[in-house]
Image (tube, rainbow, N blue to C red):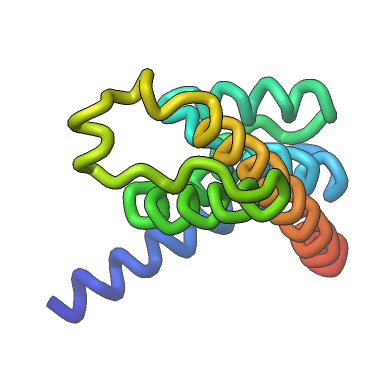
Length: 148
């Protein structure tokens, strides 16, 4: 069991090292990661990676790091991240319809929840993504510059 954990840890370290040694300048790699983090904050399941790569192309960032950055949202972080994003949007737009519970969604359906909830979620996602992406860009840029 211990030998398997050591081997798994080595593989993860090798994968992370490969990821950080992608081609491009530190700025390009940091922009790619930031683009992925930004897109990963949105609730577009299945499209986050594509959006991250597209945004990385626009900002001339690394595509592989953009894809990796979208994993800021994953099955373990979906609920807390999107609840936080909704709360941020609710704080900016003011109180609207409350976050729907599962009973509400079952009774009224997604179409009835409407623009009130969606607008707050998307605005909160954009603001959270901008802050997280900027912090991720700054931290990764500093780290990549120091490691060269």
